[in-house]
Image (cartoon, rainbow, N blue to C red; front, side, top):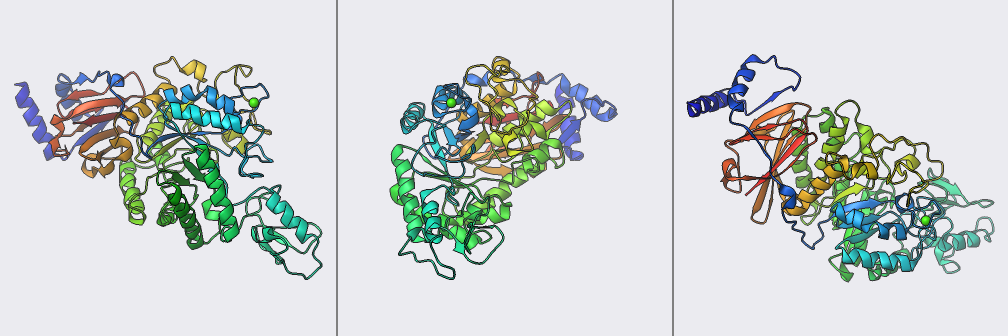
Length: 557
Ligand code: CA
């Protein structure tokens, strides 16, 4: 009898084209659905698998899960209030326990600012952060844990206190009015963009008729990366750090290399990438090109591994749009495929570099308000972490830290403890405002199975169990996706996994009867894991699933 009911029900579902039916958790007025659901519900059982004990499968290649560390605010090992390299070393187990196998260190070279994006010396360590010995130790400790370290390289501009700039300015100040620059007298005049004509984004050298390009700030003179001598300098600098054991570079502000001239910028990146290739093909390069997708995808022509995928990040990006419901859940899957197709077109060997937020953007916990905000903060992280490519997570996002407005607020001290005097707590950048946290500190969250911290850890764990998640080619199943549900699969070598997202506040029902992946019907797949944002479990009846709000189901062969 039950079988008959099921058959009738299947026909009913096909007839009405309802492959997914969603029911608002606080609304039971849809009489027909309620009756049917009651019949089905007898057969549903909770999915209760202990997937966390499954083996991880880490492949030692360029695909990684990166933790972005702002050393200044991460962990202070010597009590001066400023984070340091020794502090990072002391917390490598924290980073490793979360499942990260890559670290992006924001600038560590000597600088005049707290953020250190204005470099005074490209081959040294800022004394705030420690010594070169500390750095060597950090690399050695990372190697022991299988963690690759990439460092920020700000090539677009140096500090106004860099010897190259100081010498150029000193020479220019000796020139009589109307004289032209002679690189034979001072080669550094060609390292920057000096002119006697004023342009926007230029700064005048005091008491002279000369200006220099400084797109970001007067104390960050733009370097001339089309100059052969400058290129030689950066080849030596890159070689220096690769010899130190770094695995690659995060290139800052590539769209400003020659502001407004994508063609030249791509040529500059091609030079850098080709040079790095002569040292090793294993070196990883990821670029910050803060533009829209159409614009930054072209930069893949240079042959670099990765461009940060700005289209998915930030408060106005794809992840936030689907999590807040401004865009349908299906928008996520559709964009995963569209982005991949676009990037591949420019560089078949591209590795996407998704991120959800970074040091220039507001922290993601601030993107959501209301009763669902914790669940939204969690699933937003998962939508980032489950993307293909090299995923980047900004420090503190695993705790749902807050921070918006002034840049300093976005770079607040890592929230180890509510006690600001606890070991390792940093003071934070000068002029940071009081950043009020919404969720608990690491101390509060670490032992709470339902915390954001443990959710993020789970998401990275499942990513580390199935190489398909980072390396797979995505298929999006439009006929199974809608406003609330998004269904995708990822194929890598001969393995394919299925991921079903309920990105809504509703409990949703989905039937996967006719869905096939890797030549197998859904009924032949098993559940590999679930990511849940509350105590409610996903329920299964054959190929039908009841998914609680903001839940994720991962299945495979
Ligand atoms: Ca310190």
